[in-house]
Amino acid sequence: MERLKILVVDDEARMRKLVKDFLVKAGYVVLEAQDGNEAMEVFYANKDISLLILDVMMPHMDGWEVCREVRSSSQIPIIMLTARSDERDELQGFELGVDEYISKPFSPKILVARVEAILRRSLGQNEEAKLEEGGIVLDKAAHVVTINGEPVELSYKEFELLAYFMENRGIALSREKILNSVWNYDYFGDARTIDTHVKKLRSKMGEKGEMIKTIWGMGYKFEC
Image (cartoon, rainbow, N blue to C red):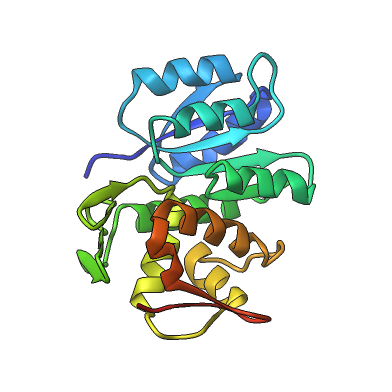
């Protein structure tokens, strides 16, 4: 099986080496960039990158700018690394379509575990091919969503969230349950992160966004 390619972007050489060593040991091919400008050059030169690990604070072009540019043409999973633990930064990252947000310092082994969990889900392993409900068709293998036959561009996490809702149609889901299931690890941040994702998902779904019902004080439920 061909090894998956990951781009690691950080202006600290020691941090890049640390992350690269653990990812290579786990069987991945790792590309490196020391700032945002170099990251975009590497990204455009390698169309087969499967995941991006991106530092926030960098010279020339910071992580937010890189994320915006990547998201303008690609929905590959993005993990943001930051030395700050500001909730506003975290929410901004999710607004831009970031899939995971990890504060420094962190355990490299945990980072690799999260990478593996994201890639398993993004590649659609051990999942049924399609979900269909109320004019929405979600193709897990192709990672494509259409509504009434029209394609809808979703980030990786938005795609996973919609899939989870459709798989649990008619079931009331708490924010904590959604986090544990969709994020696939014990999340220590604010469960309101879910609200940010749901808001964006509803907006992209147009009138079909009304199928995601709010259960005040608890979470959400998907129903026609």
